View 1 (cartoon, one colour):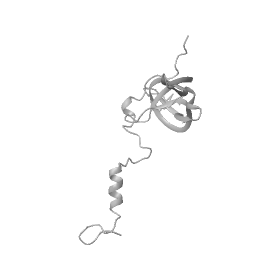
View 2 (cartoon, rainbow, N blue to C red):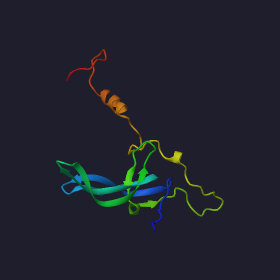
View 3 (cartoon, rainbow, N blue to C red):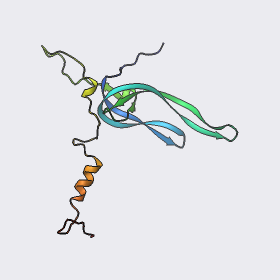
Length: 147
């Protein structure tokens, strides 16, 4: 009988490590990298390690190795999901428990940021270029000077 998953879609979790695909000499494998971010579970999938072999008559095929059952966790609604194993994340509850008179409810999906940029003030590439061009030297008519 299959084991019941610990987390459901929509659960908030603190992700300690994410899995990253690495193609090495031995073939394709998933390696954990530190993340330490809060995200929301958006699904579950199976990822397989293994190697690719080529036989001229049959073509290229994949030989399966280990399989990992991983959760898909998003940091923002527009961010791509990360692959996270069940043991590399813990449940996160943003509301304090046990306070008298408070109604306990889970945060909804819209409490998540639209896109996580990795820092406090999101700065688009266009804004960064605009700030950089303000520092370039100009002549009295406002044209850029080669220099």
